[in-house]
Image (cartoon, rainbow, N blue to C red; front, side, top):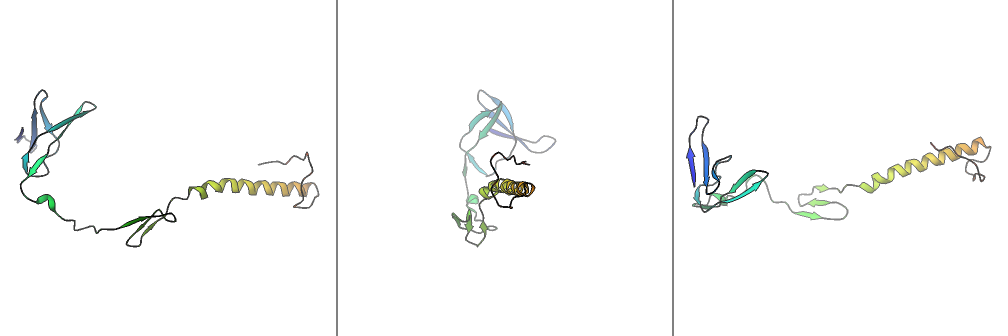
Length: 136
């Protein structure tokens, strides 16, 4: 049973439940109509009531006016392509992951070329066995 009262701050709705007692509702009912029942759930010492309402008119059958319908195509090259032509690309995590080894490989090849110059070898010649290359 829902009882409406008028305290000093404005409208507040109370709900009376058997074995639980009275409790204040945070929200008003969204639709006007006959309340069919109540389902009470409890999460972390808080109670939540779900109230199904039988609607008297067709106020809930409103059509959307602001947003149009857009189709979505999920693909391989692009994560999603909308029917209006907008494309959402998938995150390219492999490209980002391969960046760091590429930088390290380039650094190593420069160190080897510098070691060849220090040993008076040709820049792309192979190093003799046992040569230590400083790796930065």
